[in-house]
Image (cartoon, helix red, strand yellow):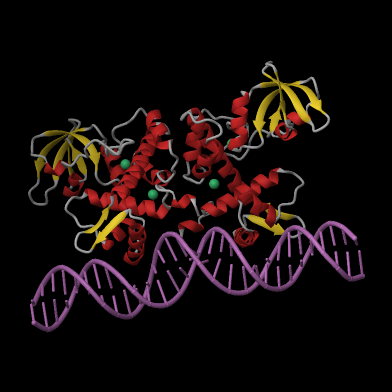
Length: 225
Length: 225
DNA sequence: AAATAAAATTAGGTTTGTCTAATTTTATTT
DNA sequence: AAATAAAATTAGACAAACCTAATTTTATTT
Ligand SMILES: [Mn+2]
Ligand SMILES: [Mn+2]
Ligand SMILES: [Mn+2]
Ligand SMILES: [Mn+2]
């Protein structure tokens, strides 16, 4: 009843909303609507409307019918810090505890909410100040700055070119386990051998090995450089 | 509405109650009453009565007016696992992230609730299977077994004898910071030089240095061997 | 421009975990 | 054994975060 009022102290739900709104705001030019937030959090639009009111009152977001929901500078700061913690914990789980990249997201989803003034910074230092998380997403620094996120997908590549897997867009277990099976990870070299014009399937060579065919959807979820 | 029913899935509050009841059960021969639980969790006896009903329904505790509250085998198992996680995280925070022993308890209080099937075991392995936490409390193994907790206090010692600090009973910042200032930690050798009969103050020598006087209360919160 | 569909909002509930105040039960004094 | 004090319990409320169903607003078709 006092601690809660301190700036930077949010409930678990508030934090999950801030993070969801932040993530949606990464898709540039797309309006952030109550429905979109509801889908992202797998809950009901009516609940979202309640929370929009609460977060607006707390000056963490602004809601304009025309332009949709946006984070205020304060809300952005909080959201980025949550993302920072999430991604740092993912590095920890993978590198120090030996988890695979398909197992870490859900655990980090809980760890990200533990808020101690120096915890993220200490963890960051302990991990050697990593730039990217195990899925290739940039890790915000303590000051909120971060490396640019990758945006070119495998499906965007020209036939006959090589690329390096830099990040994954979909972080579901289903996708990550499929990648594990195909022996594709961050850093893997992929050659785009052919695009099947019928359905945009991609014929690729993984690390120079024999050809494999993957779907368009697959290609759109691999970020390359 | 399904996951919650799985055995071993408890809410944050349920877990805190189980841990509080476990802690109270360590003081042998003391009846665990609603009031005692309320004090331990700094909440209201009326709330405790509600939760006693809930945990009884879930068969995690038993409540007998005569003998008080006790953990069922299932409740004990859950409680010990929470304690295991708490103490392992404390070791992590101290040894890997460089926190001092007066800063770790509150953070571990949140980390302990993160429940993934293999997380505690991986952390345990990563930390080298520690036997005791930074306050000298034994860390339960995956099977629930643990080394015996220390029980002899500095105040119990005979004048003129030496002892090794094995654990602290009070883990408040106030006490731990005082110990830090006195240069007392786990492993420190203390010689009990004299007991002042007037108020049971203790004249001690820390690691063979010049004498210091501490209160009876102080002596009762240092566990030795 | 009407008709229809979709999205947003409101109204009214539910569950969890808390609380205060009142009451009942149990324990301790006198 | 009464009187008194303490502990336990019940009754009733409340905030947070969700829900469903109904309604209103906005967008899309025809
Ligand atoms: Mn989360
Ligand atoms: Mn990630
Ligand atoms: Mn806790
Ligand atoms: Mn401890």
